[in-house]
Length: 333
Image (cartoon, helix red, strand yellow):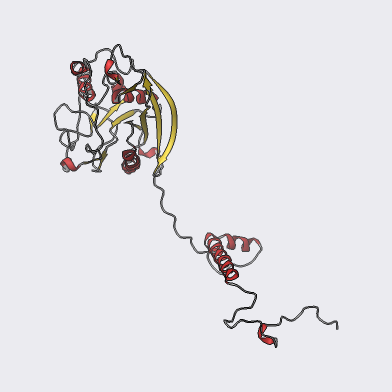
């Protein structure tokens, strides 16, 4: 017989000359080597755990004709997604949430995920459009915020897959699940009614959150584009609704009162532009019988799809046009 070519491994303690240190470690071993070995072992352990719970090892063994010792372990459950996929069973209608916006990023980060979860729980097909008024200067003057013109532009830019809109303030969050965001077939539906809004309680108030079918919004010719700065555009739109022969509806049976909504606005550090310039003080009470959806002038600088906290939305950067001859109060000089 030929002698075996395999050499018997000689352990350290079998040699007359000990290769161990007083601490029991080989002389050539160092703390660094131990650290690297621990990292390698940790990585291999995690890899084994992942493969074993995902079933890859069992699949490989079956592919080689080997029997697996038992059913593969289930991997730890992943956290659920932050948004829901829309389903056609939710109904035939789809809502375009139009959010006039300018420099309200803190509110937006709360608003988009909240509204997406709220509407999805109610099984309302929807898409959120953030209508961002782009800052620009005209002859050294900054254009003032125009909520109504942004809503007109958002209406025209919203997808044809939507058949009704919500004119929605970014700082107003619905809290009561019983609030109705369904299709307003019979007429405009004022979600943030005076009986429920935390701040505004007069009878003709239609701001905050208002739902309309696209057909009814066109019947009103949208909103007036003459309201630069804060306020009064909703009051003028109330008169348009009445002038179009539409009946206004509001929630009923809501028992949460002024706690129905969460209002994010802090007047102490976010001042509103309530200044009235030139003839604006008189103009703000006049009904605009000519302008509206058919006369709004704007340019979309960009259209960006975003995910905020897992909730999808589209940001439209909109540059509004101002006719200083018709509305000299559209800019800050």
